[in-house]
Amino acid sequence: MRFGNFLVRILLIRQLNFLKNRKRLIRQGLAGVILILLINFIAGCYYYKVSTSYQPPAEELVKLSDLDKQFVVHNFMAHYFVHSVTFHKDSLELKLRTVYYQEGDDISPVSPNQVKRYRKKKGDARLLNEVHLYVNQKRAIDETTWMVPNSAVERLDIYNHSTKHTTTYSILFGVALIPVAYVAFLLLFLLVMLLTGNSCPFIYTWNGEAFEFAGEIYSGAVYPPLERHDYLLLPGLVEEDGEYRLKISNQLEEVQHTNLLELMVYDHAADQEVMVDKYGVGHIISEPVAPVSAISLRGEEVLPLIEKEDDLVYLGNDPSRDPPLLDGVKLTYNIPHGIKTAHLVISAKNSYWLDFVYQNFREMLGASYKMWMKRQQDGDPKQMESWSLSQNIPLSVYLFKDGAWEFYDYYNTVGPMAFKKDILELDLSDIEKGPLRIKLEAGSYFWEIGYVGVSLEQTAPEPATIVQLSKAVDENGNNVAGNLLKDDALYYVQPEIGDEAELVFPVPDAKGERTIILHSKGYYEILQDPKGPPRVKALKEIRKTGNFNKYSNELMQEMLEEHIWAYDNKEK
Image 1 (cartoon, rainbow, N blue to C red):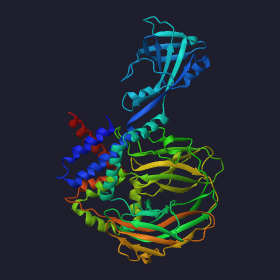
Image 2 (spheres, rainbow, N blue to C red; image 1 turned 180 degrees about the horizontal axis):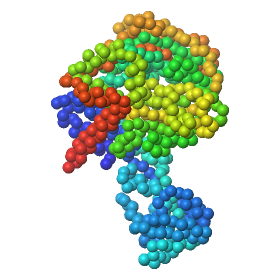
Image 3 (cartoon, rainbow, N blue to C red; image 1 turned 120 degrees about the vertical axis):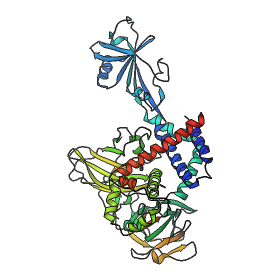
Image 4 (tube, one colour; image 1 turned 60 degrees about the vertical axis):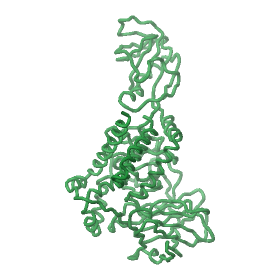
């Protein structure tokens, strides 16, 4: 089905009930839009490439024995699957099986070196497992074991998945549907801004002409015990009249409590890059080494999606194909032996789907929500962190040691609104000789991964220059800088949507190329007002290790079935 028509029909169906149940409808519409965009990207249309050679020499035919593929033989107007192939010096012994068929198409020869579309559903993907031999020697009708001289093989076609054309198609498909896609993304953005809760303060930087969105800070710190430090790279910040200007804004239904805002300014050589990890440690980054292999946890090649910093992103597997509870990528890097320390550099963000699932989870508390929130005020932060890890919400990092995957560390959640470039230092001193193997893992559809590289630079940067606020003026003209200068008991509180403060920092003298990091600390409270009795039994189940992922998948399947049912019945 066409994505554009599917989306438009779903939105029209939803409009009929808009006035009856506005809040529930908008949330379901949000999930529907997210799912449709997700499915279009990762489950829509795929391409295979046919590699063709004419009059293949004997040595090329012998090499086919190493391919774990299904052989098909074409002989004039007859086409057969081959049960087995035996390779002799000057001939092939073919044991024929059944008549060959090709779903959705005739069985006439495809064009040489052709790139052709297939749909990733049951039956179609078998095309990627085929080798086609075109033989010009006649065969007796009842001959099931057929000796074919190598010279009689006039053409050889090997079918393989074409990642290049599949990803290109995804991009072009989006361009072809710009009117629908634009409306969908605009609607999605507005709904997220108005209705979702698991976000955090938005930071904007002055680029010389206007304030532009830079990212979110201390995402996931949704209770006071989870208050944490955050380090946000500000590449677009421009000096003006000796000042750096930023904005911090509350755009969601939440109360934001910011304890500290300061700049960490690094001056360094022009050929260097500086990043700060979640522990507040600065690192000089060399040109990162790209992985030589990247395989999803489901076994699919995803290297073209994450090997470069570009617009391609790994979102996950087809959600309609029994999605696993966990997803991620296994990466292999060829690095020199003896490297003791490296840095894992990623560009990633949380998905809107995680935002939606977490909000639904909280809605299940019903009228007990406010009481539950009060209990979280004095919760144990270590237990909260442990629960989050047990539910696979952060992006976990594993290293392959002694024949097994060993948990190493994790990346903090960063929110769904913008990709964040982040870093973790890796201790490789006890990694055995051979390729470096790394696994990134989280709950299915909780993260979007755009890039993963390994930096081998060993030099630490010069200490950062810490720049404190000179002024922070809120929407009412009050200077609130005094609440943001230190990590203490004073907070700048933003309780309403639209609350914002313009931040001004003095510019220190430059000593070379400059990298600026916003160091912040705080937490936020999500405002929800669910009704009805709490779903105690379901909540207890979800809170068990790994069951949040199970709940996410069940919710996704429910939304998929609902929207597909609505579309199918509308068509009838």
